[in-house]
Picture (cartoon, rainbow, N blue to C red):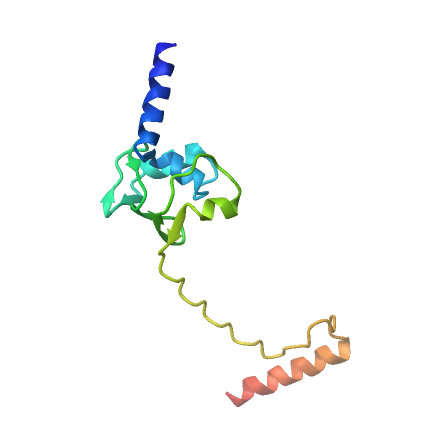
Length: 143
């Protein structure tokens, strides 16, 4: 019983000084789906706090800190605007940070298929299929 009271007192002291555990903030800001995933992310070495690698999930963050988070397919750079008191809806979570992430690189354009059909015209008939085959055979001979 005494340990839990001490823990609650430590948590309230940290929140009173404008600090919060990094795993809790990542969860509040909806960077991760669960608090345990936030802890794993923080301890895995994929999170940096003000350019310094985070050593554990209990590291304290405060307003103005910059987090760099290496996710699977992208890198997030977030400046903490507020600490938050709960895990709220996504619009509320977006108020906790300013996104400084570099823009995603543009996706390469896919070339149009040679025998393109209008959308919604359905499958080609047997006659149209033969015409497509003849067209493709002629284009192969030209090359």
